[in-house]
Length: 191
Image (tube, rainbow, N blue to C red):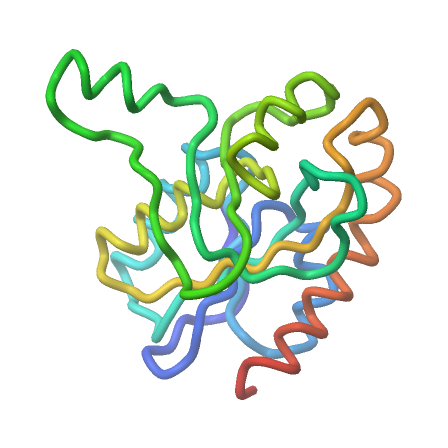
């Protein structure tokens, strides 16, 4: 976890998983929190950071795997789910929900989050039945922001097709993805 710049209550906090995703965001002058990969790192980083100083909002910017061929570009996320937590089974045992879908915007794609890097066509096809994109932090960030009552926006740039070539594709495209996410911020956030 690393915080670049001081948080201000009148400015958003940009949140990314990895330094590679933040590369082109630094010139924007906004505070950036780099959480580390995975749901636990994301939730802990946000919870501890916003406990000290509250930003006006959180904007999670990051890469995501496309679960359908031909899905490219930057996308605002409308709903997040978890693909590695069986909420239905937990509900049948306890009567409580621990991982229900969370709404984040009126319009946009569905993102599913889990602690596995999806690089298998069979896993991709299974996840595509319920979501458009896959990442490793989004759900945890929304859960942490919701608990803290801080507005959050998720914007994901497609980096790969979550198939056999996903790891190589991510390495080859992460710099361009960071640049496109910075362009989204310049177009959508008052700097």
